[in-house]
Image (tube, rainbow over all chains, first blue to last red; front, side):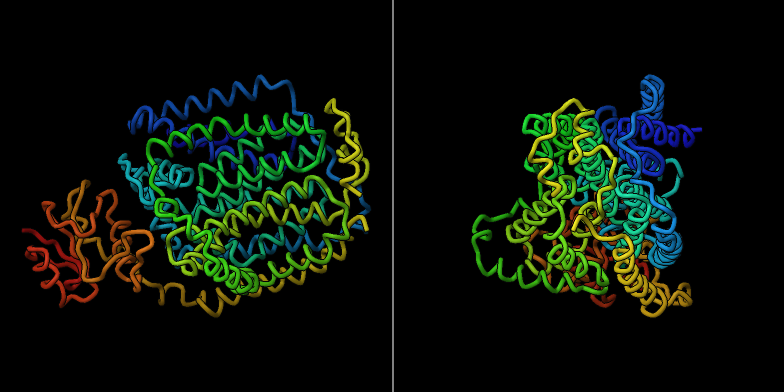
Length: 461
Length: 144
């Protein structure tokens, strides 16, 4: 009964929150799963901090999520209008069928690899058992203690509740949570690319993520990076929907998704800031409209950001990266040189990335300058570039041996950004289907009650 | 140029995906062969602490000593990660007990050593005696 209530809390609260996004089908379902797991974990943390670890508190919290979610679903005025039709209809001869079959085959293979790796390493990778699952174990027996105390609690919160429901700390519990986030990331990427560029591009995007070697590895290692990557992708996809369709209200759930990322890992707060900055800096509409969009994004992020702020100020004020940071390091040219020399090795790091990073850089260098500048792709690209630039500064600033820390963490940073980078690449490469409401056509902004700016039109040339 | 044709992109993705999946397959079939999944699997770290878990308190602080140093401060990493791994795996296995590195004043102290013949030396160095040994002397309970 308690487990059913918890499942209902995840499903209904996720469904309710995703109803604010003007999307449908697999896109909406993947969003609902991510939002459901996220809000379930956020509510757990709030209840734990505010009322303690009594099982009745958890029960009341889940009941409240079910009631609140049901009220939202019932009171929403009909189905949310959609952002647009999924691309211009193409004849079946125009869209190759094999990518869809390849995605199915790759998903089966990835699942098999995930299961095999989980059987071999049931506690996950070093980070998983030393940080994420360890923290879940401390939460589950109702004792709070912080391993890596400055890390937020979305993944441990979800795993701990599942431990308590299962009345066991079975290694399959965190494995299942990790699989759910990974599957949601693939489904969301495929569905978002399909929604904005058509079925063929959706399949290619999903195939690209599934066949990135370290994606399945990180997922089966049960590391929070895959969850953060999925949530950042949700934020980026909804932002892109808003920018391309002119339905700025999609920025509200986009902000919420980004804030869930900030409650997953510290990098999430950086990504949220970068996405907000890109939203303001990219010329996707008149300045006033961009400010309004940013406010919507911020409003969506506010509730979870309040929790993050409270956690940082009251519980997790120690940081191993910044507690011993030194400004002199940032001015040390030798550290920058060391870092810049290490980056090319990572780009061709075949074991984790195959040839995907090389391919991505080739696309950026050769094709991108020849393609129209599309606001959604530009905003996402700018956010990712900004995030990488700040991350490089953090590498130089932090106190650990630079190369050791870089090698230990850069692939995890990249896998957090990779799903969003793939979506941005698809949006930049694929021709924008005609007849869709988009800022470039003006229809989307007209529908939103705004005038398309000449700059916005120019962006798509 | 308004965009890349879908078929062109599909060919490029097919090539990159084939390489990526081949790399994954190599890992699971050659590097860590799936047919040796059960006979060559390393024991879970937890198994080392199953017996000592039964005699430790259910929760609270327990001192932790070892013959291998663990990295305990940012910027001051030990050259060998063995001691850090030993500590972290013990902490993971024994949660919600809190293992306090170098603390020898708790009621009971956990010794977790790489070499069993160093156990007595480690205990004496902290003014403790070995009360009970587990795992062939690699894990032990110490008291004053």
